[in-house]
Length: 452
Ligand code: AMP
Ligand code: GLY
Image (tube, helix red, strand yellow):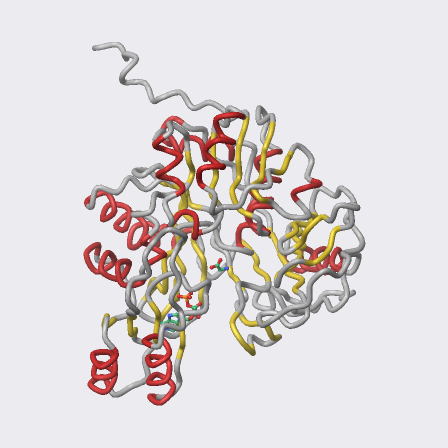
C-alpha cells in the first residue's frame, strides 16, 4: 500500500496572525471581536470601523474607506496581513476581493463575478434555474412595457425586484396590481439605480416574482469553493415596528438557532440549495470563497430561496459570532485559500443567542446623528455590545452616526433568559431618541421578559 505523500496530505491550515476586516457596521464589529478572540491571532484591523471597533481589545482601526481599493491593498502589504475578511456587499461587487487576490492576498469574500449572486437578481435567478434550486417563479424584463405586459398576462400581484444592489430598498411586495404597476414605473424611472465607483450604471432592469408565503430564515455557508461549513439558521426581524409592522429595515434584531429549521431541515437546505448553487458557480468557472447567505422562505411546498447574498447578514452576524468557536480564524483562512478540507471543524456552542438592535430616531428614514452614546456593558462572557452607526470624536466621545446604532447580543441555555439578558443590557446603554423593538424573538419566547 502506498504511503501518503506530501501531495496527498490536506494542505496545512495555519492561524492568520494579522487580519484585516473591511467595513464599518455591526457585522464588522462582531467579526473583529470574534476573530480577535481566536488563539494565535495577534492583531485585527478594521477599515474603516466605527466607534465600537475603536475600543475593541486586540483590534486597531484604519481610516480607509471600503471603496479605496488601492489604499486597502497598500495597507495589507505594509502590515503583512495574512487574511482579509470583506464584510459588506458593495466592495465585493466592485471587485475588491479580485484586486487583493491579484496581489497574492488571502481573501474571505467572493470576486465581483461571484458577488453577482447578490448584485444581480436576474443573474441569481438564472443561476438558480440552472442549478435546479427551489425558488419563486419569475419573469425578467429590461423594458417597462415588457414588465407591464408580463404583469397583465399574469393577472395577479407579483413581487417587484429592481436588479442591482439597492441597499435593501429595491423590493416591493405588492398587494394589488396597481401597486405593482407603480413599482415597475419607479424601477424604470431609475429610482434604484446604483453603480460601484468606477463602474457604469446599466439601464434599469427588474425581476417580477411570484409571491411566496411562509416564515423566513437565514442560512449561512462558509465555503472554499468546494466544501462548506453551515452555521446555525438565524431569524431576522426586518420591519421597524412591533408585531412586524411598518417599513422594512436592514434588520431590527435576530436570534439563532432558529427552531424553524432543525438539523434535518438544515441538511435538506444543504442538499437542495447550497450544494447545487455552489456546483453551478463552479460550472461557470467561478471559484467562490466566502459566505453564501441563503434567505429562505419555508413554504408549504418546502424551503424556497427568496434571495442570495454574498456576505454575512446583519444582524445575523452579530447573533452568530458569539456561538462560534476559537477555530473561526483558521476556518476563514482555509476558505480563503481553498483548503477547508484540512481545517479543524468549527465548534458551534449549542446555546441560544439573542440580538436586539437600537436604532436612531427616524430610522429607516432620515435619522438624527451626533447624539452622545452613554453607558457600556461590563465584560460579561454571555453579553456583548457591538456598535454599528457610531463614530468616535476627537475628544473621545462616541456619538451616533447612522440608522442602526448598537446591537446588544446575549447567550443563554434558553431564549427566555437570552432575551432577558439582552434587554437588560440594552437598559444600561443608550442615546437620545433611541428606538428598538421590544418583541424580538417573540416566536421563541415562552414568557415576556422583564423589560428595562
Ligand atoms: P429581499 O431584499 O430580496 O430580501 O426582499 C425583501 C423582503 O421582501 C424579503 O425579506 C421578503 O420578506 C420579501 N420578499 C422577497 N421576495 C418575495 C417573494 N417572492 N414572496 C414573498 N415575499 C418576498
Ligand atoms: N439582515 C438581512 C441582511 O443582512 O440582508
